[in-house]
Length: 169
Image 1 (cartoon, one colour):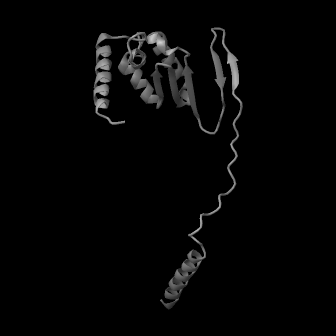
Image 2: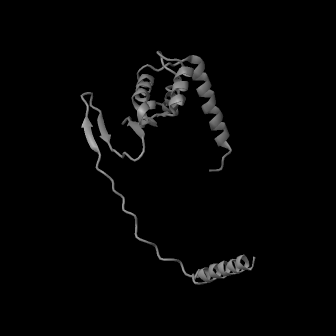
Image 3: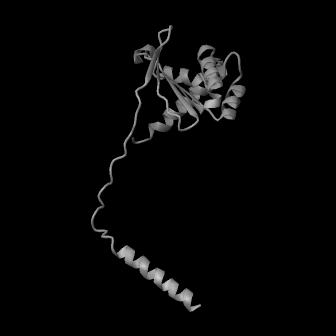
């Protein structure tokens, strides 16, 4: 028992001595900056005029793709928010797959598909990338513009605007 008692006191003293040697009144000097190795993107020009930039990093089994469309902001005309409303409608199913099946398949794959007025974004596991791109392309080519869904999205946007009306920022 005495042996454990002496061991406890010795560890307590060693810990206090180690902490006492650090001068906490001075900021420690930073270590060397980490090196970041960015590769130059590969560029591919498709026959339809799209320019594809590819940056590969094989550390994780995920794929991210972003579609950017160079459309000027004046294409919405006099009505603000038309682009956002249009983009929100793109994820409401297509003419070939219903909204619930579309969203269920995306959820099953653990993927993210997001549309905005400037383009779209996909993130998924690499094994599901081909199907995820098919779903995104289907949503862009064959959008389902249902009148009921349009009213829901419009009402959501109006409620968001009303909620932000009292927000100071």
